[in-house]
Length: 390
Image (cartoon, helix red, strand yellow):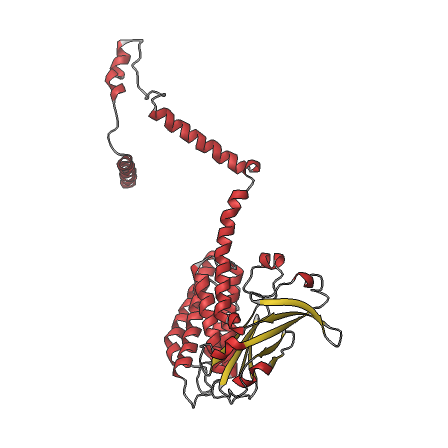
């Protein structure tokens, strides 16, 4: 595709997104809202080969507005459509995947904003999944290409005996000292990452940290952490298969967790992470650690300059020669080692002296450099204008 066609396609997509944005305040994720076709349209745009940062920002802004509006104005009669919520989650997934493919170290401020807004939107979607759901009624999931959003409303007294098992994902067993008399409902949310979008491929090759997942225990129908989260522990078991058995001994758990290799009664091996508190595994803390790593990467790039092998680089020697020549030239001019250029008359005859007066050698340009350049451009412009008229 030519650059002109690509720009035209981006302009058309942006115009369509702007048009959808004008209706976003009236679009909802409820069953009776006519938002399905709009969500499908946005998702189809993000599946095209040509996607730009402008399109990503606009798409995420629309979804963020819809989800935030639903989260704010929801009422008892509202019934949220699982299909529409899944489409919203898939759009968020596409936005995060785009940032990961273009700026996985999150060096740009816009990349951090997209990740932060995406995390907030997923938290609100997880809460909307449980709207008007009875306590201990079962779990609900939103499936995207790179993550699974799991939500479950349970009694605080049952948190210590909750087990979360999803196919092809690590098994989570919650424990701790939650009070058996506390029957207040809490919202349990877990984000299982199929693809690690929080770590660049180069980092994943050198770092054997387990795939990320976030666990949040929030107050009912909110995104605020429940007080019960600090007293709940988690035991996360990652299956060891033939593909990852070689590096299992070098695997490391997330910060705050201790890892060991265990064997089940059936003979299957697992890398088990014991985490004292799920409060440290919230999406906000996980995102903060990602931002910290991105800043640490900047320091890593700066420190690489100190260990770079300059003597083996021809670019270094070229730049050194040019810089030396410049410094020597300035020194010679300032120290008057090199005399100023003078126009001397021809000594062969008087006619030569008349053609080139001796006083010409004392001429000096008093006009500033930038004014001289400006006048030169003006002369060139008017000269071309005269030629055109002739």
